[in-house]
Image (cartoon, rainbow over all chains, first blue to last red; front, side, top):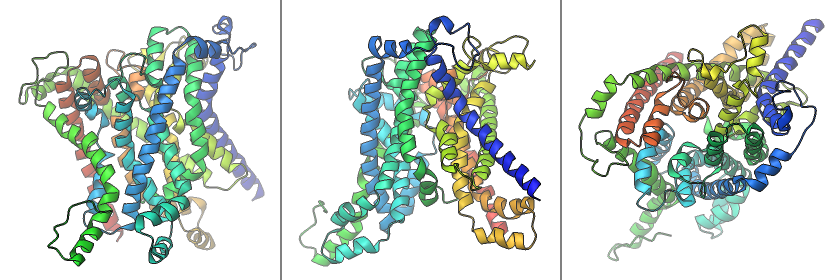
Length: 277
Length: 309
């Protein structure tokens, strides 16, 4: 009995280790090539770690390339998108959580439908609409588009967090004379801060990753976000592997930070809101 | 709060009733306006493009062409191949994501020391931007700097280290592997959340009755997970079928259109050829197919849950 249990435990740990290795290996390889000096790149191609390391690629990318600007553009777009989406989603999620009103089911259905249809379908019409408004090749245009794409899921997420807060709290405040919006802002929103943080993280990560609309709406490097800049770089200087991967590592930093921030809410938040099977 | 003008002849109770009716809509208004103007209006516009000749670089385009685009589609070999590729790409990606995601969720549902850390590490790929995931895997497949071709050659699966992504017969496995790597965490997170909501006393009762772990899995775990799996697979299938990032980054549809899916074909038509009319017609076909698929799954799920009752 103990032998089988020991074997089971070992097999379980080994399987977990396999999953961790599979998840981390590509990122490890990215990091490895980004610190490999150019003269060792091919001679030590399949070694697990180069015999010498260098930060030259990072130095070059940060000092002599346009990546700092792409990085800043992406930060501006993703940060603004996250803030606006979360604010709007908080209002919407609150309404879905607290009010019973005619059309509510229909509204939730509409939000769900926006998550289902192919976004690639909107590439052409959105370009045609934004172009005369001067919102193509503009960070503002990207923020508007990304906010609209992310706000439905963010609303469901916020609704889930609000559902977990007892409604007696704001009812007590409203009996004491506060109007509902004040009660929402001063009592419910502070209690939902973990949910707000998780939603900010989700939206930020999604906006940071978006590529199709960035490619379509942005031309030229002045307003390019990170994916646009990186793909242009790759197609232009496709032999500078060290530099490309150094840039790739930079693209990973903000996404990973946000992920570590939100990951402990993931399972809890999903249970609360998004998947009710 | 209610800024709408209210006729003064109405008495107060009505005004209050109106305020109560309007209040939830005020909270919803910003989201509704945004979604309508950025998603619904373009969607309708996109449907109309499918019947018009819209080419960005041709100022004389814009006229109605009726069903011309759809007739052209029926004869477009590249589109028909893209349809077949989409089936293969979506089916394989979702299958592997579900299979490995379920295994991972079951593994993580057992308490052990360091579970929090393990969970954070295996979920990490999900935070990786998709364009970077695509580039990263393309580099791993590249025999110049990536290890995978050398490993395959060492195992005897390949005569000499070469790039999978350049071989028409197996190129699709590249994006599928990248999509699996990227998508396992999503299934694992969702299924883990579902697993944790299964009442523990069910398992206790079953083991008192002498059910083996395998019996418990098939008679408790799986029936509980089935509805979650059905809805997750539905959502993911639609999402993966629309998902063009990895393919655009890794192969751009090549070699010889062997990895071109409908989604990447739409992007190519709109972005490279700037033929918005044709791109919209392709998109409309994709939308119709996905709607039909969703209907089938939903009806199937309804039947399944009716049978349980």
